[in-house]
Length: 623
Image (cartoon, rainbow, N blue to C red; front, side, top):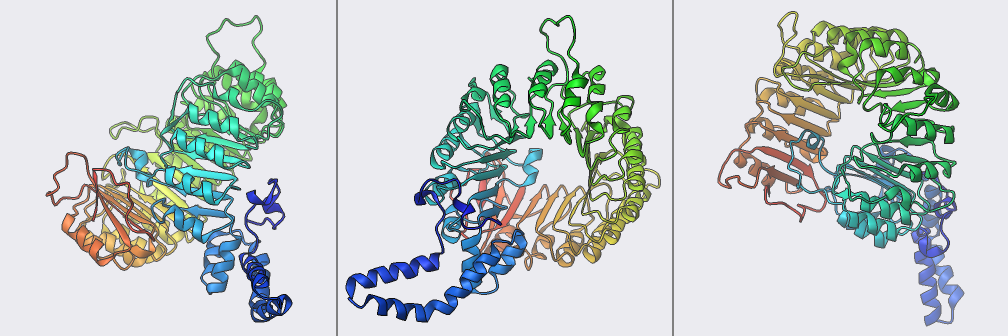
């Protein structure tokens, strides 16, 4: 958002593909032009008009130049609320727009308010859709957005979508409508296939970023890699690790070779270790690498196996490393030459034992972001704690997500991390057993935490040493971590834990609750005590009608509320909908649900400037 006016149109060939100039100046020019055609006293009319508007016009021009240096969305939102003049200028200077819920407003409202948008970040389904808690055809369609923007923003350069339904036709319209398009990022999206990606690759000649991340991409048997234009490309980032379809490796090798600016490359599991070796030799400039499969292919082996360590050694700029699908342990030491430079390491697709892991992590002293499966065990986490003193983010995922499984990480690993990585800011930790003492230790040793997500798999599990609820552990987190903005809770929790959250969680914006609480009073503590709360996700908890009603003073200020498998009645939900007309109240069931049933399976509430959506499926009722 810091571009000046010349930079806003640097990639455009004519004025028709450039964002509009100062709208107020354009209005003055149009008025003078029309006045000159109706009266001979041209200069007098223009002079009179300027004498009336000049002070405000100068103020808005100055303000426009100042606001162009304002990057933070929160700061821009605050500036737009100062007065009508600031609201108008802020809209004129905003080139990047973030919309956290695609149904919070219509595409038409977006284009009417913001005239110079070059970048859109749009989110669709709520996060619980990742856990199969939402029917697949619920909505979040990209079609109305791309069709509206095609007319309003021909200079659009970037689209970043998360949990949206995107079709091949949407991608074709995007490729045809924005000649200067540069960045497409699709995270957890569905509905499209390799045909749509091929159209983007072929028609977006200035493409810099094509990132497909955890999306469902249909295999249309299209050689999309070969669709990139011949000659030198502008590609800086190419990620397709989620594409479960074979690729034309020769075409990929050629594309990488003629992309001198390529810094990020994330491969799918169908790219073998031998092929990775060839790619690395042709792209030593990479800084972020996703290895794809980390095993050799089934083709006949040459007499001498490639020197994989030498290929990694040549990539001296690599600081982010991920992939390692279908890992063969004997090849893992080949990454040792780059370990000392790594700031991010992702083993979340690799089933690695502690013995395999420790020789690697002992060389990663600069690591700031680390993701892994719990197969590294507490022993592996202790090695992380001993080596990675600058760690900022840790995510530990379950190799076996079943509730009854015996998890290999516990309170021992968590406590080791808290003692060794005291600059930690964000943690996601799946485990089967935990203690209050370990969580309290983390709250005391890592006071800079802003994100704490502890997922104790299995319902209502207490402190496995004392047998007590986990109230005091989570209470310590909200008391001692003053910067906490996101919290996910689990295990055996009583209303006391929620009382702690209401008393101390003044900065919490996102709260995720599963199988927790005793009564409606628990949710009341949160809704009355957490003034910054924006996103509330609840499943399988005893919060009913009384709890829902106690938050009616808050819902207009929140992005959404999700409650599934909670004892809610349809009558109460209707009361909330009647009392709050600008709140969309969706009851989500299944196609065969009885309309007369009073029980609500899933409630999804969100604020909207344009009322209920018009693409409601049969299993959704808007009250």
